[in-house]
Image (cartoon, rainbow, N blue to C red; front, side, top):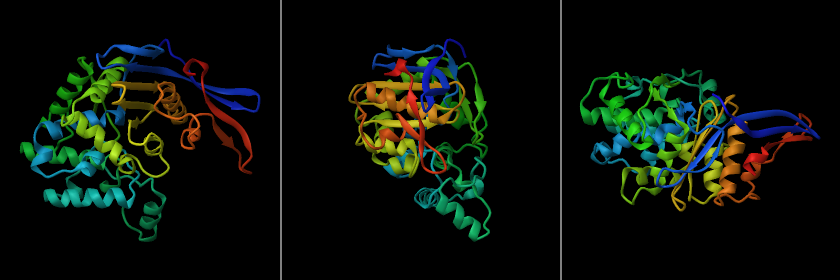
Length: 326
C-alpha cells in the first residue's frame, strides 16, 4: 500500500503515542468518489466486509426463497457473529431445515467470542464445533445455494459453482475484474478489488430498489444488528445508534464498510496496519461527517474519541480521529 494518510491517533496525556494510517473512500450512487483519503486505487482484500456480496447469489438464484429464508437468515449470511446462543441456535435450525449438520460445513471450528457460550463449552468439556465459527451464517448461505444448485460438497473450492457465482456477483457490483483472491479464515476465497471498487459496490447496495437482492440484504442487516455481530461489537452498537438507517460491517485486518440508503452512498476503509481500534474510530468519524451518526451518542463515544483506561480505571488517553477526517 502507498499514499496512505493518518486516519486515527492514539494519545496518552498530551502526547500522540501512535498513529494508524490507511485509506478510505465514499461513493455516490453513480459510483463516483465523493470523499477520499489516501489512495482510492489501492488493492485490498475486503475480508468479511464482503459477506453481503457473497450472499447475493443466495437470493438471485432463487435459493433463499425456495428454502423459505427470512430476514434473520439473511442477516446471519452477512454476519461475523460472536457464537452466542442467538447465533448458533439459529444456524442449527437452518442446517436442520436443509437436512445437513455441522460436518457439512467447511469453515472450521472456532472458540466462540461470546463469553457465556465459551464458558458453557468449558464447563461441559465439550469440543468446539463449526457452528461457533463467526462465519457459520455465511456458510449456511453457501450450503443453501449449493443444495439449490445440486453441486458437490466442497463448496469453498474457488472453482466450485458457489464460488464462481460469488466471483460473478463481486465483479458485477465492484465494477472491476478481480486481480485474484486470498483464502479467508473460514477457508472460502476472498476476492480482491480496489478500495474504490468496494465503495462503489456499497453505493450500489445503498441505491438498490425495494425488493432487490441488495435491498433485502441491507434491510436484514439493519433489522437484526445483534445477529450481524453481537453484544459489545462495533457493528451492532453503531447500527443501533443509527436507528437502522445504515448497514455497516467490519472485516478482518481493519476493514470496514457502510451502506447509507438515505444518501445513496457507500463507504469503504482500510487501516494498513490491521488495527481494529483505528478502523472502528475511522468509520465512526466518517459516519459523523456524513451526518448519519450523532457525534455525542453514547455508542459513538465508545469508538470516536474513545477513552483509554488503565488497570485502575483511570483515563490515560484517547483514540481520536486524525484531523483529515474531522
